[in-house]
Length: 170
Image 1 (cartoon, rainbow, N blue to C red):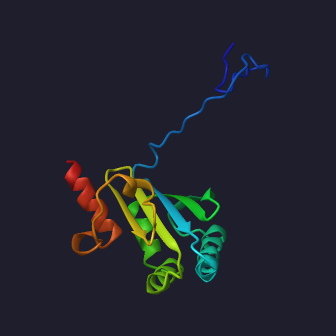
Image 2: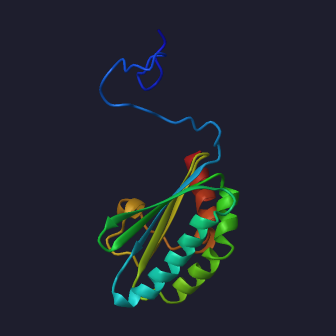
Image 3: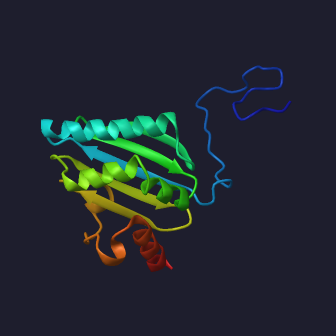
């Protein structure tokens, strides 16, 4: 009698007990990009920046941009919000970063962080990783062990950073 992945026979009776282990088939997503983001609240002065990012996140949750497959929010700590996004491909992610609401929020945030910290790390299925950290004490993620460098010249944009990283891995 055949048993499905959940240990259930064709007759609908459980054939085994214990945890259900699953995995995913990512072959349909050859250009997948996973992005981790963090927002650290530094003081009450940070609240306007938090409200602005919250509006942007609500916008993309209700009307996802082309290429955003999933968006999840969680906490790293009591004052450190986390976001994980899955993008179909680097082109869709880059289009999003160059349009509203993201482009305006990022521009305004870089003018005045209001005591907040922000970071992101992007992991590309086709190779290459990149990261940026703005006013982040304690150096989270990749910055906790990799050498720090200034985001200037060939490391100014995320797409430039990931290309440089992928080339260095070849």
